[in-house]
Image 1 (cartoon, rainbow, N blue to C red):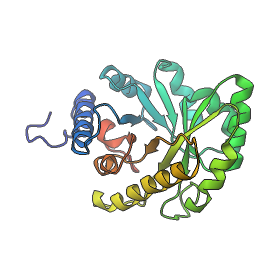
Image 2 (image 1 turned 180 degrees about the horizontal axis):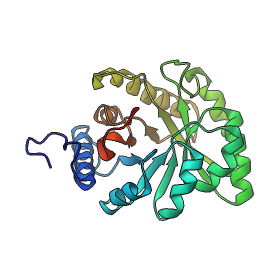
Image 3 (image 1 turned 90 degrees about the vertical axis):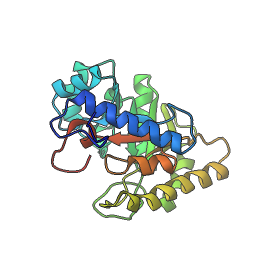
Length: 240
């Protein structure tokens, strides 16, 4: 751990960086008054070589997130005991491959996509755990369902074989100040809570929100899954 108690330096061992992230998550969980272990850490491993992923796995992390199907197909056989999440956009022509590869698909964004997942999962005898991605900021550059469409999407998911919709995922508009993300996290939680009240029996317990820059704020607003890349693996181009 860094002497000052801050984030480990860029050249720090991945085990140290992973431990620092886990400690910060545990502190945020305690501050929010929630039970220890109630937040799942997804280590965002997109663009990272398998040897770095194996190093992080040896440090105790076992859940990984990938954005691209082809890249995931090259990595997952090298660490089959891990839990793998698709956290990138899911194209219709890659649904079958995604269902075969991933335990969780966090980026379903329409009733049509849910039906495609259902068909592929049912054919293979699997049950896909799914989150509905929500475009909170109305950003044209991002995927995700419009918040106003969520009720219809959830209604369409009722009775689909091979699919278990567990909650929502979101990537809010980027803010240099992590507190700038908090209103978006709060909105996603409030959307989830309202829909859970409206739809009897809806199992919407999961909220995947928060990345390297703002996962503590996300936990404070009810995140059950955080997706952290840069803080674990070190900097690269793009967000993590």
